[in-house]
Length: 84
Image 1 (cartoon, one colour):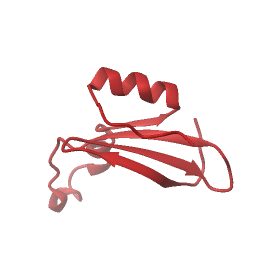
Image 2 (cartoon, helix red, strand yellow):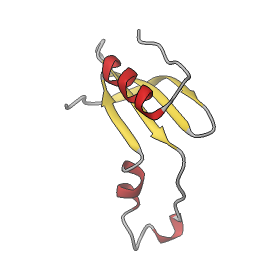
Image 3 (cartoon, one colour):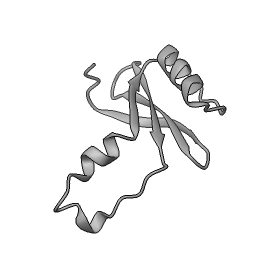
């Protein structure tokens, strides 16, 4: 799914998770993202290792609203974020 340029319009979080809603620039199209904050990253070693892959391994998305709800249920995420 290629969404183009987008920006965060809403976010919710707890100690472990961030759930964000993004909107495509000049569009009504939206996407949802889940970020697992439960990892450590030694940014001083990013020139030696691929930090992007480590971070991306803790991100789910882009998701549509129904897929977001399913993934939240699988992960046990209880807080809400609304669709437009």
